[in-house]
Structure formats: structure tokens, C-alpha cells
Length: 138
Image 1 (cartoon, rainbow, N blue to C red):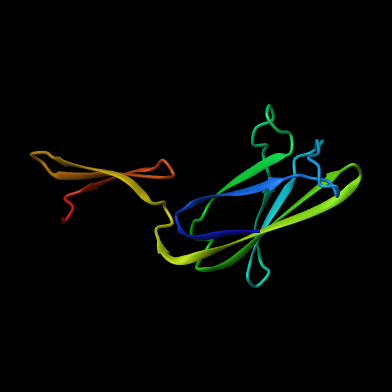
Image 2 (cartoon, one colour; image 1 turned 90 degrees about the vertical axis):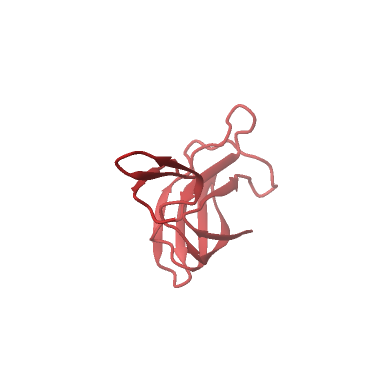
């Protein structure tokens, strides 16, 4: 499955619907694993995928990935592996990272403060970080 195109700094969701060969949703005893590879096949990230909503569906999982400096422009593949009913399953999703963006995250809000000692620009990114810049040139 192709997820789309993103820029550095974006937070993307890597989804997984854990199914058996039927394809029916299955209950997993262990969380699935995810590995993210670049176009050359180099492993960039490995981790376990948390459940999305266990009260509504036991087969839905999602991994939130912040596209920082480890993800330059290019195509990437995320491979999920899990075991259900004694059988191994592998699913994959692909996405592209386009040139541009900011590895710290996209600015979603900004406020300009004028004070006697300095002008201050307050910025907040979609990753929840806040930046304070003194005497910015506007």
C-alpha cells in the first residue's frame, strides 16, 4: 500500500490491519514489529507497533513516525511482521519524502511579542515543540 508524499518534519501514521490468510482480523498475543528501510535497503528504524483501539478492534495497529534528519528525500518501505495462529505474516507500506520541510516539525502557530528589551517570535510545531526567537527580522 502506498501512503503518499510527505516532507521532513511531518509526522506520519504507519497503519496495520492484522489479518490471517482468510483475511479475518486476528487477536495477537505479541505486538507486531515494524522495520523501516530506505531505497537502498538500509535499516533505519525498528520497533514494536502499539494497538490503535483495543476496545473497538483487536486487529488495528498504528505506528506514528516523525520524519526527522534520518529521512532525507527518497522512497521508504515499512515492513510489518506478526504471528497469528502459528503462522508468520508480513505486510508492507511505502511512502515518499520530498525535498524541503523542517526536521524539527512544521510550524502550526506563531505569535509576535513586542517588549521593551526585545521583539520575540514564538513558534509551535506539529511535534509540540515551542521555539522562541529574539529580535527576529521580519
